[in-house]
Image: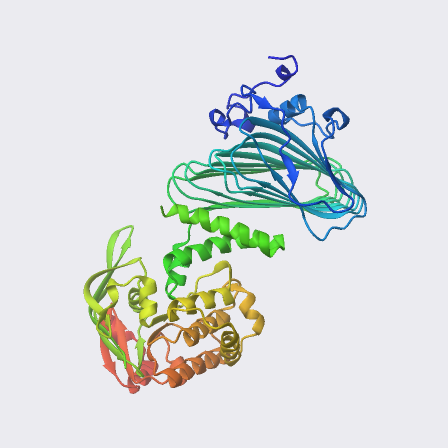
Amino acid sequence: MSLLTSNYLTPHGREEEWRFTPLKRLAGLHDLSLDVADHISISSKAALAAGVSLTTPDAAEFPPGYASNDVVTNRIRQNVKKISLLSIDKDIELSEPIFLKRSCGNTAELSRLVIQAGVNSRATVIIENNGSAQIGEEIEISLAAGASLNFITLQEWDRDAVHVGQHHAIIAKDAQFTSYVVSIGGSVVRISPTVEFTGPGAFADLYGIYFATDGQHLEHRIHVDHNVPNAKSRVNYKGALAGNDARTVWIGDVFIHKGADGTDTYELNRNLLLTDGARADSVPNLEIETGEIIGAGHASTTGRFDDEQLFYLQSRGIPSDIARRLVIRGFFAEIVSKLKSEELEERLMGRIDDELAKVGE
Amino acid sequence: MSVLEIKNLQVSVLTDAGNKEILRGVDLTIRSGETHAIMGPNGSGKSTLAYSIAGHPKYIITEGSVTLDGADVLEMSVDERAKAGLFLAMQYPVEVPGVSVSNFLRTAVTAIRGEAPKVRTWVGEVKAAMASLNMDTDFSERNVNEGFSGGEKKRHEILQMELLKPKIAILDETDSGLDVDALRIVSEGVNRVKANSDLGVMLITHYTRILRYIKPDYVHVFANGKIVEEGGPELADKLEEKGYAEYITA
């Protein structure tokens, strides 16, 4: 073991931040017992617009812009030689999304991606994750003043994939960050969307949808750090679970520091259990060091499929499978419809239908 | 010409305290074009009758039969009953978040008719039906029953009945929670469907108020899980005057 990696203790599963995660299924991502390839898997699906670039500079040129206490993130930082860098120039307004995809190899990968959205830029970035992979991932997203960025990640992995990631956004004055984390595939997916603000008027809108079926572990650990005055955050994650040992974890930490006056935050998590044998953990957590805020709240519900809804729809002639599909689509529609992309909405609803179809098998 | 035949229907519901008997042998026949008012005190089992016919899984049929034109209704799944021509307008319509009224109506009509309605005629059909029930056009973009007022929910039920064109409709306390104007609009809707389609109606109500708008051919008094008296419209007048006291104590 090298000197560097020993700075970060390998988790054993009793630590608060690891107690929900099945460490044995992480393929060694958390302790680096696996062989890691020096491989850059991020590429663009289409030609990039003027003012947008995707490059692979040396990691040393782009030191981390924040301190992470995540073991995997820190090991990524110590090990990657090159990073992927997506730059969006200032004042650029893109009408079409920047569509990135990952092509992971057969060996495990550690990946650091830095996204820089310039002053007053407006863009949508989509990252598509398909296939099989063992990946430890850090994405650092910086929004300069007045920037507006929609950031969408699609975890549509094959069923053997292992994905541990931190997506950290640093949001400057009057910038708006909207993220959609969509986790449907994979064996274990553990993503930590974290946010910090560096100027007033900054806004983070964090959405997530997930659907776990037999044996899948899908974990999302949100942390919003309100460390400047007059910033705003909203969190809304919705998940469905079905089948034996389908498992989801949602952690929603919001920290309002002393001096973060005028903070406005609300976080929400809803889980829908479709069958027995599934388990959803939902842990909202709000810490407040100042009373001078606009609002702070959270809500978390986990419920069973509502048979009265099913009866109502069926009593209008709608067969039970279509009725279930309607209800599930309806459950996710609140978030999916916000994507404002018919193509993406249909793609996600299609994936949700596919997951639902597995439930009956 | 359709006939809904209910014979010696006995129904229980499973409670924490065990099986509770609610319907104790109901006999009733409803034909196309007929309107039967089922009147009775609260807790007499009127809604149980409605939900049992529609197939709600909560109710256990212990005895008896229900047939529609000879076909065994009790053997059918809930959606098959609707396809066979039964419709239940519910007292408490269920909210379905995230599902728009227009999507819901199109899905239901597609299921009932066996094919998707033609886009061109369909939009007009829905608009006309909504207009006649005094419903705003933006109503169809709202989520099913979500945030609807009591009157909106009932109009939405009648809208569905108008579009699904059932043979026999069961209206479960459709008058409850309606002000005079809404009651008139909803009643006119029922009468319009009756005039256009020879609908048979089972009108379940506690009060005689709605019978001023929808004229029954027969009135059945329901108490203690069965029909205890039957007659023509004049029976409703008697109930208006004397209430249900004599049936409850009997």
